[in-house]
Structure formats: C-alpha cells, structure tokens
Length: 169
Image 1 (spheres, rainbow, N blue to C red):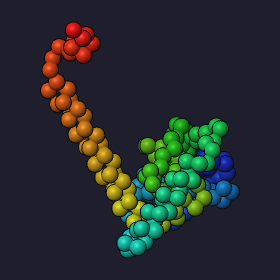
Image 2 (tube, rainbow, N blue to C red; image 1 turned 30 degrees about the vertical axis):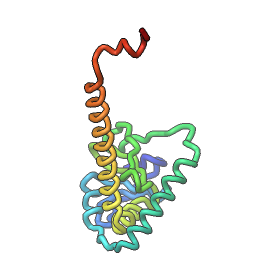
Image 3 (tube, rainbow, N blue to C red; image 1 turned 60 degrees about the vertical axis):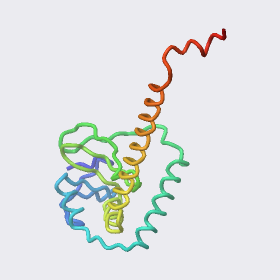
Image 4 (spheres, rainbow, N blue to C red; image 1 turned 180 degrees about the vertical axis):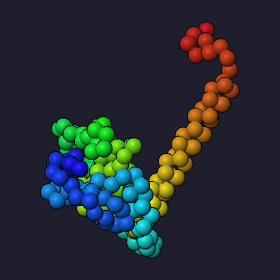
C-alpha cells in the first residue's frame, strides 16, 4: 500500500491494539474502521478529577491556539488508499485538537504521533470531556428554545391590530 501523505510504500504492523499500515518516510499510520475501534477499546482509562481538570485546561489552550493560528491557505485533501475517493478531515472530537483524514467506508490516515495522542486523550478522560461538551451544547440549545417559546407566547398575548402604534389620533 502506498502512503496517501507522501506516496512511500507502507509496511504492515500492529500498534496500540490496532492492525495498521505504517509509513517509514513520514510516520503516517493507516488503519481501518475496525482497527481504530480496536485501538480505542484497548485503551486503559485511568484518570482522576485532577487529571481531568488538567486535560480540560489543555483542551482550552489548544482551542485558543487553533483560533489564533492562521488558517492554511490551501488544504490538500488526500485520497483513500483503498478506494481512491477523496477523504475528509475530521476531528476526533471538537475538544481534542486531533484531526485525521477519514474515508467513511475504509478508515483513517493519522499523522505522526496522532495514534499515541488519541490514546493519551482517551486514557486521560477525553471521552468524559466530549460528553460534557455535548451535554452543554444541548443545554444551551434547550435554553434558546425556551427563550423562543417565551417570545412567541408574549407576541401572541399582545393586542391584535397594532395600528395604534403608528397612528396617533
């Protein structure tokens, strides 16, 4: 298999509980959907409230850095080594700062060190942070919907006609 990142020949291996193709040139790693699932399932989750707080602070720092870094002038999308379709860039989750090239059918192309970064993020409680963020997003959405319902109820309670607002008589 040729590396989608640098076109070097990849070699088969196993790392972090996943069957992968490794690029000796750019250190990219290709794994299937099942391989990624196996890698994530093999992660030992060991975290405390303190380590979760530290990860939370680290994620905030990553988001701030991402917002201040200039966007790349041109994105180059890679092709899936299995089907040749253009892969999409996708974040592990919005907080993680880990972005991979993904073929929805075949798998993930991870850059150098990204599989280890995923293992670290999940092992330190990243899934908890992702759930907290999703919960907060839903709570914010619910608050917005309640505000809209209140606004509609108040609009319906106003007297009909409304011409008195424009014409003084």
